[in-house]
Image (tube, rainbow, N blue to C red; front, top):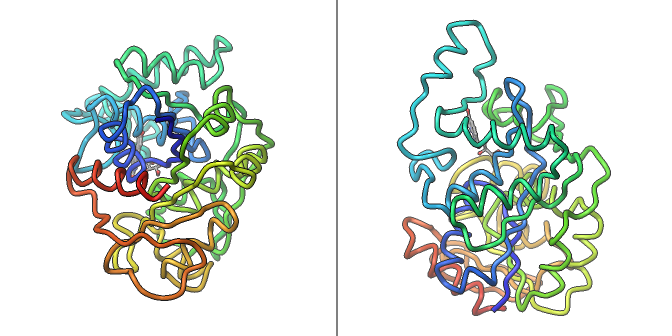
Length: 300
Ligand code: FO1
């Protein structure tokens, strides 16, 4: 079975891990968000791609949700002691990946090619593809001003309410993206924040068009449980920008692009324009992630 998954970082990566357990990973393509990529200490960091890579390689930190397990922070401590940039924490193990990627990008290798190389080196069977090789950056408009995504999310602890989300840059799909969407038996959207994890992927016009004209079912998984985000600001953003946190508000973020929405049993009622699949969506462990992926696929 061929499956294309649109995914952000933490929750999306966890879902991707379940998906490659549910089906033959050779048929899975994970299309990752790059809107929150940034340069830190001169290094090119792609947080969502990295969360997906680490999760599929079994190297992720389960509790933190991002970065590597067994991480140490000696390099960062040195950076801090020297008055360097330490607001975005790069661990010692994680640093190695950013070094390899930065060198490759500087040498002219596209992000998609480096990402595939990193995944291969870590024995990942599924394909991990950035939505685009072009520069696409997410900006967050708040009452306190406009901020690049990570400045708002990490440096300001996403405390500012969000009035709008914008995407800077004109981007073409990376090689493999349209092929994965066109050749899929099912398209899934991970339980990621619609605005800052999935919209940047859909900001690539040809990707949005591929979903809008899909010939196979597209199933999204809601990131909410009981109207609340499991982690992060998705619930506050939905309440402020869409007017609520029901399944209908989540589905509204994907108007015309999905056929079904998998929602948690605590969010089960209320009108919904697409098919509703009600289940327990909390991904407490790998079994739960696999079960959720199976249910999403079953709805496709
Ligand atoms: N998230 C944080 O909240 N604080 C950090 O210092 C931080 C560092 C970091 C380093 C590498 C990486 O791959 C991810 C990192 N994240 C950090 C997570 C990340 O910024 C967000 O979870 C995603 O961008 C949102 O999907």
